[in-house]
Every structure is written in C-alpha cells, then in structure tokens.
Length: 518
Image 1 (cartoon, rainbow, N blue to C red):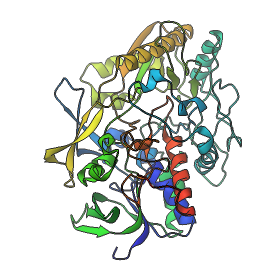
Image 2: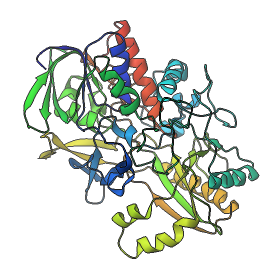
Image 3: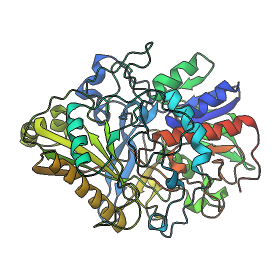
Image 4: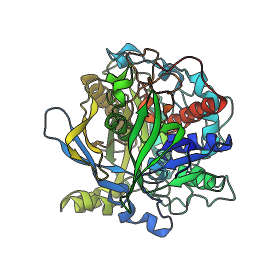
C-alpha cells in the first residue's frame, strides 16, 4: 500500500464497484476499500443465519442511532460486505422515470432540490448497467416506461401462480401490471447457474449466484484484470490539504493496524449513511460552499408491506417478487395528495424461521397459520427531501472502528404519510379483488433505500456536489452512491446508482470536466 494509486474507491456496492470497472478498463490502477468481507455462497446461504439482519455481515456495532426527533434514539445496525447491499437485495432493477428528474413542488417543497442532470444524460449508462447486471425485463405493459435506446438484455421471467392471480385482479380494475425488471439469471446466460426459484432472494445471498449482484458480476472479474481489493478495511479519515485529498487513513479490522493510502483521485461510494459520516468526521463540510447540506435531506421512501389473507392456498412456486403496478406513479386524483405517489410491487411472505427470531411467542405460531394463504405487496411512496432529516456525528461515542458514532434523525412529512396511506389503500383493493378478506400492514423502518445526504445540484450554496458529483472545494474527490440524489423518485434506486457511477467514472477517465466544482 506504499505506492500511490490512480484512484482510491471507498465502498464496493453499486456505486463503487461500477466506477471501479470503468477506471480499470481505462487502464487505471484502482484500490477498492471495503469495510466488510466476502459473503460465502452455497447451500448455507439459504439458512436463517444468512438472512441479512441475522448474518455476520450485519454490524450491530456500527454506532448508528435513529430518532424521529421526539422519542429516544434506538440503535440500528449496518450492512458491510463485498458487493454491499446488492448481495442481499431482491434484484429489482428499475430505471428512474423521465419525469423523476424534474420533480414537482409537491415533492421538493422548500428544499431547493434540483437535478443537474436529466434522463438523457443517464440513458446510455442505464443501458450499460442493465447489460453488466444481466437485467431481465420488458417495457411492454409498463404505463410509465421511459425511452430506451436498447431492449432489456433478457426477457422477463414468468409470474408465479400467486402473482398471476394478483395480475388478473389488477387488470380487472383497469390497471396495467407488468413483470418487475430483475437482475437475475433465469437461464438466459448458459455459462452461469440459473435461478432455482428457491424463494431466498430478497434478504439472502443467492446460494447458486444466479442473482447478479456486483460482487459476482463486477468485483470478482475485476480482480483478474488488476483491481486491488482491501476487504475488512475501514476508511476512517480523508486527509485534505490545499483543496486535495492527499491521503485516506484506514484501519485493518483484523490487526487493528492503522495505515494511509494515496490516490490521485478519490471516490466515495460508502452509502448515504457512511459517506456523510466519513466526510463530517474528516471536517470536509467546512471547505465546501454547500457544506451545510452534507448529512441533510436524508430520504428513505415511505415503504410499507401489505398482506392479505386469501381463501385458498397457492403453491410457492416462484420468486414472489415479480410483479409491478405503476399506474399511480405520477399521482391519482381521488383521496390522495397532489403530485406523485409511487409504486406497488409484489413480495413473497417471510419464512417462519425469520419471524420467530423477531417476535415473541405465540406470534410465530399465528403467522404460521396466516402465511400459507397470504399474498403481499410492498408500496414505495416517494418521500420529500427535508433539511431536518439528517445524519450527525456523536462526539461522545465511537463506532467499531473508531469513527465518531452517527446520530440519525428522520421523520416523514405529512405528505409522505398521506402518499403512503393512499398507496396502501390501492394495494388492498387489488388484494381484495384477488380474494383477500383480512389484511395486515407493516411499515418498513430500515434504511435499505437511504438516499440524499450529499446531494448534487446547480447551486453551489444548496448542494455539496456539482453535476459531475465532484465535492465542492476539493479538487479530486467525487461521490458515486445514493447520497448524491436530490430526490428519491419511487422505484428501487440501485440501477440509477449504478448508471450514475458509470457516468461519473466515464467522465473522470476521459479527462477534466469543464468548470470548477465550487
């Protein structure tokens, strides 16, 4: 580690890994730093112990505490592994809709949020990201489908029998259900093991590596092409001198040895919580003209799961997470707030073993009676960027690697909650039409879709990054994860994170971009 690299990238998820691929292909020497370790695959990946929050890759000593501004903070863990959240996600790979890059005032409010790029800027990189991740999907039937320069790399998988029933119910209501775009090999790539439809996608690593996470599809192949990877290594400080990052201080998690690495360029892809934590811990908000926004405008979608009890049982013959309804994406005129609402997607029922670890007896027994007849939707409502939703350093505590602990404050706005309620009502209507008669609603409180804490924008006073995601005031620092988003849209953000990282890294490899980042 004594030699300088052309680029040091912190975080190996969708942003960091895709940026690394561009730079390695351009002939750069690249060091990829990852706080977590490789996630083993094979039969054990389907065990209860491998479920995301029960796995050894979920750090309960991350030093994160969450408050809604009124109640006492509660501790939450954080996921660290090679490939980041992609290893445990469900594979859903949506492009943002074209209108998402021009959000209306019902969403932006007084936040000054603005996208300095449009859909056309990302479209070729969406195409490349879909190719790299082997996304299977179809635009037909999607009433909000954005313009495409190329078809999906593979056709969608067939609905499960339960999802086919839900699709029939939705169509009877005049809606337009269609297959979710999924980064999963359903047999279209003969050299790779196809999906075995085990039902352990969302929340588990894939036991046969059919889910095209970035550890499998991007990081591992790059190691053969010259990428240097440091797993189980935490970046704890960015050293800035005269407007440049001159060193990245790290801690080896096994030996606890501290050392410094150097890169001509530094890219941050640690996620919308860890990226501002490192920036604030390094004092870099003080050199940024928009530094007051660093850590602010945290978004996470107003997500809920709605289950309905059917009168008949359906065999669990597929993924369960395979159907989308986006008819309400841009809004709905009745009993809903003005402006965009969001998306509705089918979800599988959770295994009893997972439920048993989370709730006391006899609730797992009751759930065991309910789940064989249950059908579910997740509703994703677009949330507003609010300055009060933020991450801050806790000067009195540290995390497991010596970084100042992170205090997270998040509260949904009245509009967020109204949009979420409106989507849940529409999801229940579909379930009721499919034959459900009893319903259960569960809000999702995780930060799996955390976005927006180091946002890009045109105004140097109200955004920390320029349109190339350069950190204002520091010449050689860029951010490539979901923290760059000014607004959250209402589809899964992973593909947009990947596409934007490809865009930023491609511009970086091509040479200096016009204008300063200040």
